[in-house]
Each structure stands twice: as structure tokens, then as C-alpha cells.
Length: 390
Image (cartoon, rainbow, N blue to C red):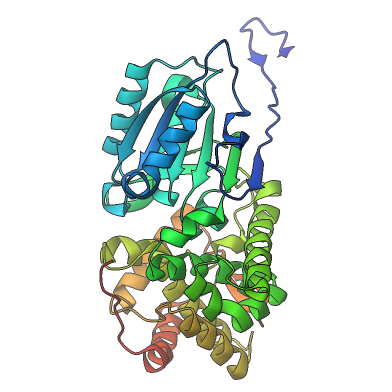
């Protein structure tokens, strides 16, 4: 801290805060002999935990989760939340805070435990970051999109005023535990939804991961990453590890997004607007894939990838049962989405486009005429396809 030395007196305060958090793969997390979930926090004679759990997860796994806490002598309160994009709002966050306040956790010694998909980890993470200006929390993502995307970064958020994730914070969970056994109880569409975020990493930075999806994607989708054979088990682990590593590799040097050219924003320029307008017809990953398809065509028109590469990308999207087109793709909506992205990216488009398969570049000069020309090709390749509500 320095004093300016002038009569008016002012102080310039400088401080740094070191941030570290762990993301760990584990199998069968709630087996009675596992203690991963109880490593954080202090045990002063009896552990206390406030648990926020997704309603569907509670229905499918609630009994064994409660049995786990009871086996380890944990005093707990479990709040069940019906979490999806239609209730991803500040009111849901406030409900969690009220229940949390009623339980009365110790501020630093009793981390909140969040068990659910990416929507719930976003909502509950925001609640934890606001409660007493920051309360430790642990995450157990239970969806594929949570395992490889929403559950491994530091962003929390809720939708507001018709905009996706307009309110949020940067708040890392102390520990995130990734257990693929939860995926066994997801429906096929939810697995496909998560595969979109894996495909994103493959298309902009990992050609080897793309080849894995090309070869094993159909099996991974059918087996829900459970590995029913030695070969498919090896492929499931390799894909999950590569996707998670690729995401964290991009996030770590830029956790607070000081650098706004982020390759992991691929598929996230037009999709926020499309997703919010389509609710609940499109899932997050589906909207992202529609965006990636359009961005792939923009890149193709600019000569950044060949027609063969474009068609190869579209073939894998189809293989993973992802939509490449939606009826909301029309010039006015895309122009609005691009304007919103420019505001979000501090005045420039910073639009990530693929270079071949596995590379990326950023552009700032996409015009409405270019979008219209790309849409014409997109419509011809994709056709009008809207998936049913899950």
C-alpha cells in the first residue's frame, strides 16, 4: 500500500489472491468405503453438510446418497431442486440461500455439496459465492455436459431479463468429483447433449479427440460411457479425460476471462440467443451444435476448411444425434445474437472459427450479408429439424 504524500491523502491498495481447485475423476463416488466427498472441511466431533441435489438425481440416487452420509455419521440437510433452464433464475438462487441460512452452516468449515447437472451447479454455485460473500462448495456433476463443461470451470450464473447467464460470478468449487457412473441413468438425448461440448473441444483444438468421436461416438452414445467392453471402456475414459483436460487447459490461464478471445467460446456466439428463444425445445448442447454447424459453414466459405472437412464435421454431428439446423436460424435473430456477443466481448466480435479440424482463428468482420449467404448453405445441408422436448 502506498500513500500519495499529498494533502488530499489517497491510498492505492494492491492485493493478490491465489486460487487453486481440484477436478478429480472417480468411480462410484457414493460407495460406502469412499471418502472423497468428505475430505474438505473440518470434523469437530461431527461433520455437518448442506446438500443441494437435483430432483431427478434425488429420485434415481437419493436413497444411496442419504445412506452414504448416514454411514459416515454426517449431519446433513438435503434440499431438492427441480433444475432446468426454465427455472435458472435468481429466484431459485434465493430459495437455496434461504434454506442454507436456515441450516446455519459454519462459514468456512462446512462446504456446501452440490449434486446435479450443469444448471444446478451454476445456480447453487452462485448461491455459495454470494452467501456471506463466499462459502466453500463441492460439486458432483451428474450429467455429461456437467462432467466436461459446466462442472469444471469457475463460472456460476443464472438467466436474467431474457438473457442467458446474465447474472453470475467467478467462484471455483474447492473440489469437483467426476463420476461417469451417473451417466448410466441419463436418457440418450442427454448423452448426445453432452457430446456437443466434447465435440467443441475436438473441433477447435484436438483432432485426435475428433477421430475418437468419429470411431467410437455411436458406441459411447449407446453405452452411455459405461464401457460394456474393454475397447469401449478404454474409449470412454480416453474421450472424457481428453475433453476435460482440453477444457481445463484453456480455462486455467484465463479463469477471469481477461483475454476475451477464448477458443472455448466456439459454438457460443449465436447459441445463447437461439437457446433462450427455443426454450424448452432445444437443450444447451443442441443449441451449441447448431451454432457450431453455422460457424463451420462460415469457415468453409472463407476457405478455412475444405468441403470434405465440412462434410466430415457434419457427419460426426449426425452420428452423435445432434441437430445441425433449427427453424430459429433467420437473419434478424442471428444479427441480434451477434450484436449481443459483441457487447459481451467488449466491443468486438471475437468470433471463433475452425481452421481445418482441430484448429481455430478469431474474426471480427462477419457481416449480415455473409450470415445470409452461410444460412442459405446451412439450410440446404441441415434441413428443418427440431428435436422433441425431453
